Image 1 (cartoon, rainbow, N blue to C red):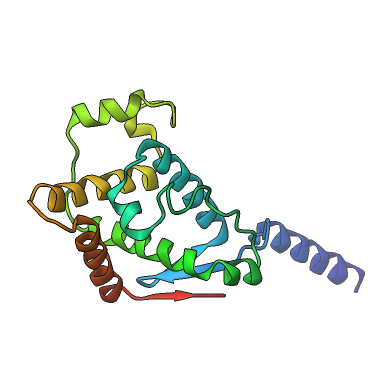
Image 2: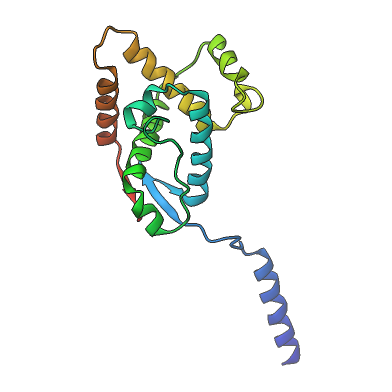
Length: 180
């Protein structure tokens, strides 16, 4: 009997050590196109969005969503609570549209001229080369240049409204759920 108890304790200890451990609790903030976005991922995106806003003071994407410095001087600090996200619901809807635009544009082989990248690398917003920047920052840059090429290359009177309508059409095509 004693050996059985020792054996069971040994097995229990061995299984507990090999089982995955939760480091911290994380909360799903939203789901976009069947892909959940956890709070930790969302916080990284917010940091990357700040870097992008630094790189592009005149971002067409941000102007059309009213996430530029003129409309939102400083991005709100969003803590991991449903009440915080609920209070900032309008802001979150704008972020969802931006993320959906990233998802949509990732379907295409977008590229940016090397000279334009070198201009961005000279800014003090981010250290290192473009290739070392986070995927979200690079993706936002590609979205920006895609929108500029698509809408600014033509003689349009209401570029901001046209980009906004385009982003709204993407918003309708890609599903999302908010968890707050």
